[in-house]
Length: 579
Length: 46
Image (cartoon, rainbow over all chains, first blue to last red; front, top):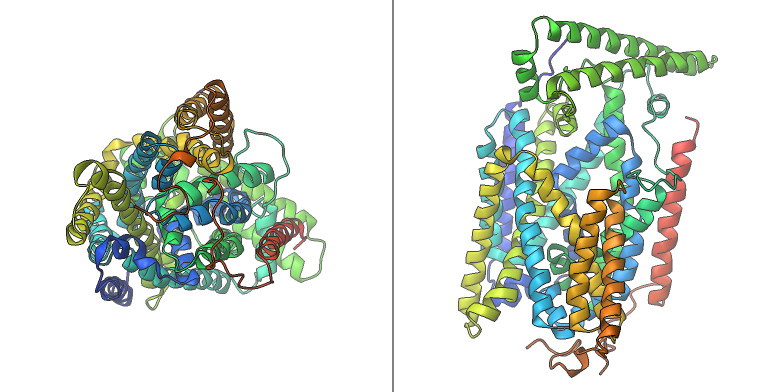
């Protein structure tokens, strides 16, 4: 079986180098003249809606979303798009509720608002939860694409982490949020260009006898085009209902309570601009994810007519060759090759029958059978490579492998630059938000409450650098953490919905007390933990469970303690100038 | 002042469609249309 050529040509290196140098130079240039933490953390609150909106979009789409989503479409189809169905409705709810509260309260962090509404304890706990989850996740944000790109490009993981992390830290430390937002704008433009380029290349590289409609017919026969599953099964991860309801709660929690996103729209020059930055995403997010998934589906069809490696991850393949019983890998290679050739022949026959206007149903059935045989062989290879109960999952390597093996004339370098852009834009926003929460929610409250503007700016830059170095260290050690990465990713889902519940209590219920909010939050997290441990309910529903538990428990505790709400007695309530 | 109700502000102008309610309605309608188109895409006999 052929091994994909993964040579990165000189033109590709030049394009990648130009991107890295240009984005750092641009980030430093737009960040010049930053004065004070209002400038550093919120870009002077002068951003237009389209810039803040593109920054919101760029923050959400990380590199691993880009390569993972295409890989998921390749192996399982487009059902993942349901994950985003609730997002537009969440944006409407947030524009109606939290955005005006945060914006008019002139807060730096979402958690600052909770002190004005409830008490300092609730603010400290929610901000601490953000720092813990985002602080660990930022390492994974850097590690995951570094791992993939190091294998594809032939670099060491440390080199990839150093390049992506080092360059991003440089411009975020210097220019703060203004640099983050403007580089996000450029990076998001590059990402959109890359998406259309990949769709175009995948279509153009199909064989002459297979048109776009034939490709989609093949994908449909292989169950790769399913997008709307009406099943009511709560254990299925991506159904219309889990996407609409669970996805809406997740999006409300992420865009409404996660500082990495709140900071984007708090930088708007007016409330209208802040609202529009979110609504802009409400219109574009689902179509964008559709195009990314479609790219994965077209790559799937493309590889009907081009030989694929036994495993996409070359490191895993090398390990399999080294430790498999003698002759076993050779047998699997021969089986996979035969299955691939059978599928290629069946797919060509199906497309030819369609084009000739003949009855294509027999050819369709033959193709379906050949696809199933290939999937069976693939599953056997992955079981052998990963061991019993833990088959190798290398879907993240499919798209980068396609890019570096099939794109020429600098285009591979451009698409790898797009993956870099997706990673750097997310990392930049996360570093900026971590530094903001650290300085505003902790340093300026507990360490130095009377620092000058210059001192605060210096401290903010230092904390940005410290979080950047921490991210790099976590990323470097992530390979040794193994399954701990999964724990880190799950960690956030335990309390995302619960934090949303606290904000819902704060905004929707004037009577809710600080005691109700604090113990409601703890009850919400405990309930989600129990649900995740003792039921098989799909993870999108955790957000609904957490938010509703906090809300109900918070109201019950409020009623039981005879509270009437404390915010009205607090100085600096919502809408008043920040102290 | 009611702490759970944001005060009105002059910076909240309506950029298009006349009212914010109309804008939110357009977002929701667009989302539903996109989902319907996706369902049609999945079931279309290519």
